[in-house]
Image (cartoon, helix red, strand yellow):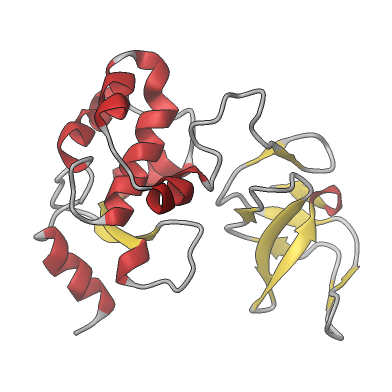
Length: 192
């Protein structure tokens, strides 16, 4: 059985966060260890878009977390905790967050992206011009970069799409260049 079919079966053909039944796809809950069913959810494009674009959340859309936060599936619990943490200043998400229980390992996974931290403690990634970088952004290299441990040189002007942020160091991002996943220093990129 294919991976997406397994997710579809597990979710009952609906978004595991809001119960929508259209425009569903697999969403990997970062950071991943092995990938697969235990680190993914089946979600609608509306939920995924709002997860990946902080500040663009429709508060009423996320009222569905009242149900999905009780999911037996750990990746769904992790995303519910992250979204409730992000929205907690709006009142009712804080109340739901206080009702949630995550074991230590699951809570560590949920906190790994920095969600739930106070803004002054949050690591912020900025490009060479000081523009804030977010998970999923696209950047362009502003100079040729030699990739350590290989003979590859990432050329100036190369676009790197769908970047991932290092949640321990604000100077590092990850992205694919010529099909190879590399770590890039933020002072050598410009947001597109």
